[in-house]
Image (cartoon, rainbow, N blue to C red):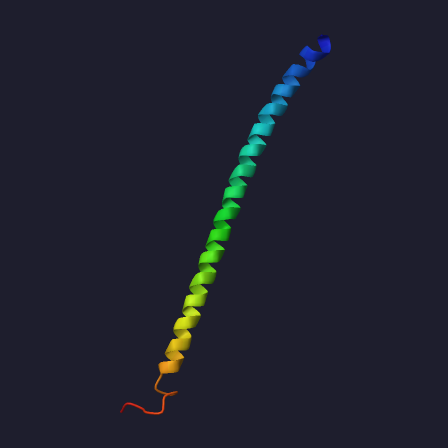
Length: 69
C-alpha cells in the first residue's frame, strides 16, 4: 500500500503533463490543417491566374491577325 501512495503524486503529474501534451498536439494538428487549406487555396488561385494569363495572351493584339490602330 505504501508504494501506491508514493506513486500517486507522480501519476497525477504524469496525467497533467499528458493533458498538456495532448492539447499542444491538438493545436499543432489544427495549424497543420490550416496550412494545408492555405496551400490548396494558393494552388487554386495559381491555376485561375494561369487561365487568365492564357486567355489574355490569346486575345492580345500582338497575337491576333488584325490590329487596332
